[in-house]
Amino acid sequence: MPVQTSRRPPSLAPGAPGRVPPTIPTQPGPGGRGPRNSKKRTKRKDPLWARLTLIFGAVLMMTSGVAIVGSKAVIGQATSSIQQGSLLGDAGKSEAEGGKNLDGPIDMLLLGVDARASWAADDVRSDSIIILHIPASHDQAYLISIPRDTEAEIPGHGTDKINAAFQFGAQKGGGWEGGAQMMAKTIKKMTGISFDGAAIINFGGFKKVIDALGTVKICVSHEVTSKHMSYVNGKPMWNSDAEKLGKPMTPVVHKKGCREMKGWEALDFARQRYGLPRGDYDRQQNQQQLIKAMAKKASESGMLTNPIKLNQLIKAAGESLMLDTGGVKIEDFIFTLKGLSGNDLVTLRTNGGNFATAASGREMLNETSKQMFTAVKEDKLAEFVATNPEVLSTRK
Image 1 (cartoon, rainbow, N blue to C red):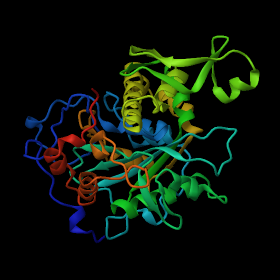
Image 2: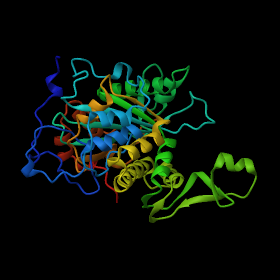
Image 3: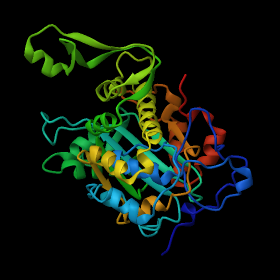
Image 4: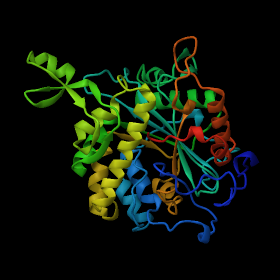
């Protein structure tokens, strides 16, 4: 099928100037497949297919460390219960951009929503917005977080915070599919990027996965008081539920330091942004830390190499997940990236992790961020990151 040459550029060799090194402290990353010089690369211990199986079972788990097991049939069986939907609309890649061909660069839209049972189905916004970019070389991958308050032109709804796009699309019966389609359309209008696939998970799905794992190790860099939960008689509860009881409430405080957290605690910490020095930028890093902690625990517990345990883990998140692989079978999508390792995952952020306020009071993309998205569209992100290291998302 015809493809635009701008989306299939020659990849950089692993040791070439401009390529992000395979090992970056605190920056493990997704990546892809393709020709590689094994002498110049570190030994691979954690192919990406298992992490992606967990992504598609818990959306964002991309950094486990496991050896490949099984085949397409095994992967297909493990992911057969995942709900699929039409999440991209006309923001999917055209035939001229590669269509269903996964041989070139791969771009996915990953959305996290905070939908609670008491909320109306059309009153939900996406609180986590991430673009996953895998270059045509399939030997590296990048996660780019977009702040929820970023100002964007939402088709048919004027200018608003970007996370409102999901809510607008979900209204009048649009549901999650309509919300994702509007978000994808908004991001395409803002960045020019078309997508090969998309995934949505309700944050509640993360809690189920963590509960299945037992606990995860989380490090708190800045003490923060929860805006969402309190203790009542020593039991953690949503503030809205606790207030109905009329009993004394003690705020949940996430104190500085590293410790094992249960599902409710880890999830609540990852939701916080008020009271943190850099607000939503700090929350993005905390969410990335949670994703990595979940994947690490899954790997260490042997869940990812045991088909039975893998099925159990995916089932724990399946009720809160919806996936769109652009018409490609899930097992084909995952198996395409079977050669990638955790060392290939690089996490990026807009605006260098610092506030850039528009006249409206909302976040805006600075010039460097706009250039970063252009580099994604043109599949030149490795060169861009090498010359603009401030876009790397590192924990201090």
